[in-house]
Length: 362
Image (cartoon, rainbow, N blue to C red; front, side, top):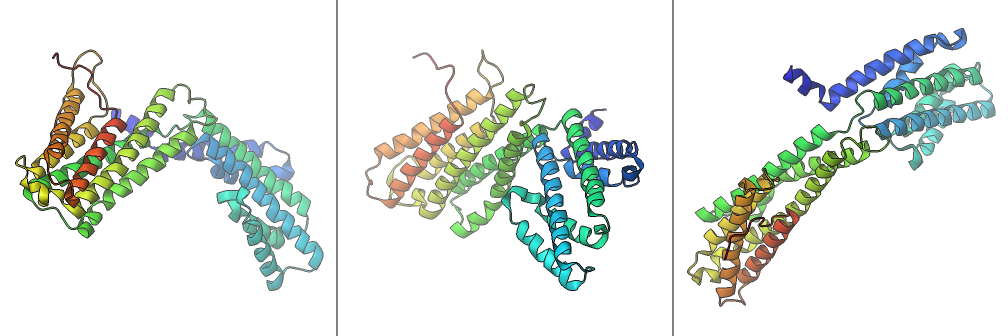
């Protein structure tokens, strides 16, 4: 049972169910129309499938933009046919396609722009015997099917895209934490890779972050004109906050990673400090990784694992700051790099809202 429920939460399966239902309903509705239209009922399922999208807003947008593009294509084909006054030939079709592609540059049409040239060629090849009737049959039934598609999308578990976004955020969080721990491990073993090698390792994290941003954007679009938006407002808001916080931290982590890899402050003049710069820096990065990995507090009235992770990160950051203050090599390039890393750590913890909730009594 649980497997079936999890399967039903997958966006592609939900869209498949909605599209199938919308296509079937639109076909049945089209069959109830007068004979002049019902014999072309197959156009209605086409409009239904076109209009079923991951969000209600996208469904409505695709519906009217597609119909508009089809009407523009039909109008263009009829205009050219009236001017040429001859049966379509290679030159006529070439002219129509060229003009249609010009119309497709209209930004209002967006992804549905290609329907202009498709409809224009369709009209000039099969619809010129009775253009008005063909427009009513094709565009009218497509519009009918699109309306059914939008209605089904709105009423049948209208998608909020929350499951995908939560999964993308969790994946990005895990990769970011692993990224930080990898740097820390390299520092402990004195094996920090060259900048080019580390850039290669960071590409997987970049892809995960791109997917997370796209999923968060999709959730924002899914809230528009969605009857479920109010019910899931808290979850959607949390997804937005988590995504943007991780995005900010990822930018900061990328900066501090390159500082460590390029300048390797633990191998410069700061090595003369007895505290062991590499280990202190590794502790700080591991502490930040721990906070990244635990986004929420388990309880409001008692310390939990997130509190422990925050305490560990702040303690490690304090040791790093103390190391900087005690150093006498302020003119060394490594000193400035290490200082920038410390600032990046501070800002990352602020972005993650890592605060001590239960301070120890003095």
